[in-house]
Length: 393
Image (cartoon, rainbow, N blue to C red; front, side, top):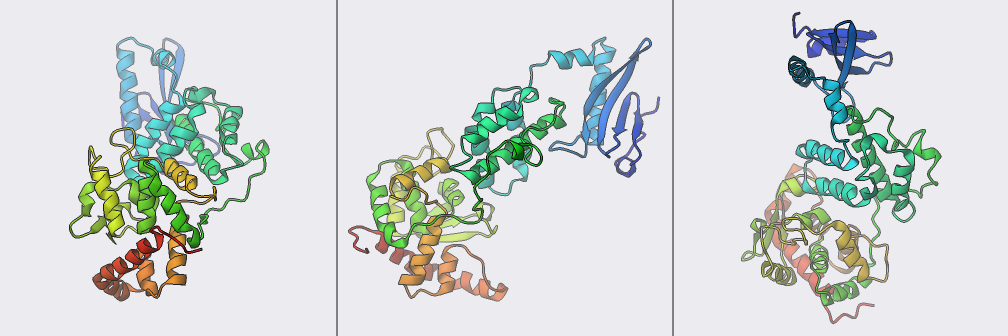
C-alpha cells in the first residue's frame, strides 16, 4: 500500500467527519466537532485492531504529520517483531502529574523569553501543585484539584488563579499524549466554578506598595538579618529592580570598577538592555556575595546553580515590615513615590531608573546618552534616604 498520501495542507482542509488514510495503517480521524486524531489500524486474521497516536493541531502538544509517521513506523516495527503495541502501552508505568509537568516545562522553555517566566512556572508547579505530583495523570479528579487550590484560594487569589491555569495546562498535555482519556478537572468554566468558593477580586496589575516613610525602617531590619534573601531584597530596593532582574543576576553582568550593572535585554520586561548605576551600599552587598560565590549566580540558593525563590524573598521583605501584605514589585512604587514627592530629579530620570521606556525614538536615544550619571545621583540620594540612622517619620 502506498504511503504518505496526506500533506499538512490536505489535513487542514479536511472538515468532513471520517477517517482518512496516509497509507500502511496510519489514519487521521476527523470528529463531528472538527477535532482530528491520529490512529494506527492493523489486522490480525479477521480481527481489526486500533491504537491512538495523539491529537492533531490541538492541546498543548499537538502531533504533526511528520511525528505521526514516526510513531506509525515504530508500531510497524513492533508488529514485525510479533509484539502487540497495545500491550506495551498497557504495561508502561503510568505517567504521573509530575512526569507531565516536567515534560511540559521542557517543551515550553525554549519559547519563554526570559528566565523569570520560566522560573515562575517551575516554582508554581513544583511548590504549590505538590499534592498532585505523585498521582497518575489519568486518575486525577476534580476533588484532587480543588484540595490543591484551596490551600491558596483565600489568602493568595492571584497565585491560586495562576496555579489552576498551569495545572490545567499540565493535564491538557497528558490528554494530548493519550495518557489520560477523561476530561480536564482543572477547567474553570462550567466545572471548578461550580464547586469552588467565590474568588476574591483579583488585583492583577496592582502590587501592594510600602509607604516610603516606612522604607528606611524596613531596610534597617533587612540589614540586621544575615540571610541571603534579605541581601537580595535590600539590593532590589536600592536599585528599583524587578524581581527577575535580581534573581537572574550573574557576575559577568557587573563592572564593579565602573560601578555599573548591565542587565541583558533577555531579562528585561521591555526587552531592552538596562544599565544600573551601583551605589556604595549596593557594591557592599555585591562584595559580600562575591565572598560566598561558588558560580556565576550572584544570589545563589541552597541548591547549587539555582536562585533563591521569589517566595523566600517575599518572606524576607514581610518579616522586616509590620505590613504583611506588601510585595516586592510594590517597592518600585515606593521608590517612585519618594522620588516624585521628595526630590527635584527630572521625571524622565526617575522613569529611566525604573527602566520605563517613554517618548519617541529621539527622546529615548537622548536619555540613553546622558542619563546614567543623572540616575546615579538619584540612586545615591535614595540610598542616603534609606540608610540608618533614620528619622523620617
